[in-house]
Length: 161
Image 1 (cartoon, rainbow, N blue to C red):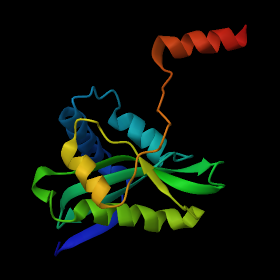
Image 2: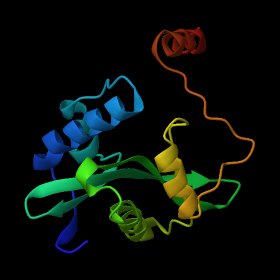
Image 3: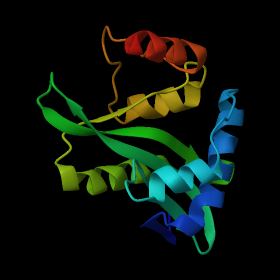
Image 4: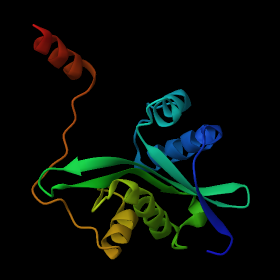
């Protein structure tokens, strides 16, 4: 990993971040609905909702980790959730994923994070092996759920009534 530098993303990086997130979505067979404008607004606006750390060699960005704080009432402490971890194909297998996660934990010391969570695509066996090798374990009996789109609007309307 010689010549690799880590740094926090700045607004001028939004195009690169968006391109990497689109590549990640394609890799996972997911539909990318986010935009560079949303990243700029929500990551670099008046109230940033996430942070991004970039790994680069020279002027080429090789990977990113997009993350944000969370709090566990069961653990009684703050943590950090990695929403996206992406490495360019030529950067895989070099130890960059672990190094990016270490950078996330270093940044998360600011809010005393005592744990790290993330989600992994069930079909991404390479990523699952990597996370297991780093000591990650399944969340137990919990299953992630989402409320969005028409179901979210119906819920909002029901709550207003």
